[in-house]
Length: 410
Image (tube, rainbow, N blue to C red; front, side, top):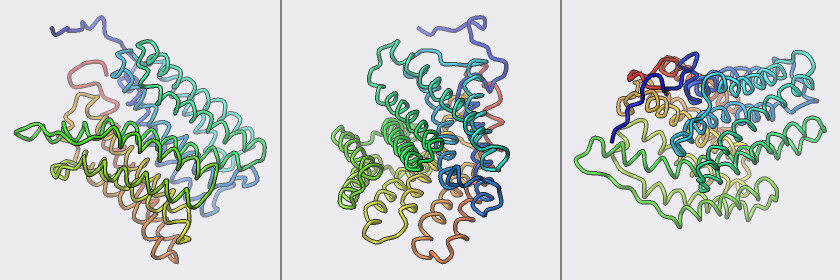
């Protein structure tokens, strides 16, 4: 029986952008993706006063791409999705603003370090307090919701969030102890844990989205192939890959594990394929993101033997598994959870996805064949990234900041 919620029973917040976490975190994360990449251009060119004795500029960039931008998107997604999974209301209104403010204050600290304003140790101390508070607060409310309804199958997500908090803490510990090895471990652990979340959640939502999206326009229901065996193999091979690349460098194990992850997920993609995805940008973008990750694992497998930079494989994984995947997911979630049609996305999404694809080509593929032009390729890739998020902000922030057309809370 349909139950209609009376207006007096509905939650209320000071502004629509504080209704659910995806609204404010997607908006803030997208703006920050522009700001931090613009600042990285100047840091990379040596145009700022960043204290290289305190932190390696490469780690400054990596930290903010992962624990800044990506954690904002993960928080926005999970603090929204857990409500759907568990039925437990997640933070909204001023409580949500408190969580977001912790994230934002930490970002101001890292921006100040990148610009070179004041004492970097003082700014990083402020950043550490608010960054870890943001992550612990987010993980705490998610854990409380999951445990309250005994959805123990979600413990994998919770464990990854806990390890991400530890990884972020290692970055700060490494900076303050002067041991960049801790920072390296914290950065790479963060990247691979985030990719673990992407592979876990992607396994749930990508085939589901493909089935729903293609069936919507078709005469019959579409079903794609999934395999529990492939799920287990993907998890195990990825775990070996993470351990080897972060803690136990061995080119034989690295190649075997990376090749294993790539092959398992290629087989997954073959099972998920339907020619109808190419008619729907919100589907082919997710599919290409997974395909890009498979290519990235292939690069990890051959890198020890061909001798090109390890960084190229890392960026292949980051741009596809983080860049394209988050933009594609945000583009869909922002429509569905604001009561708009996911089957008629804004026309700008195609340009956004093409720009992210260009970032992959210019940051990863062209340096493989023409390293002499590396700086030029890098600048073009950075520009493509920035333009992608400029388009996202122009297109989606008005959607994220307005009430639902059906007047429901969400």
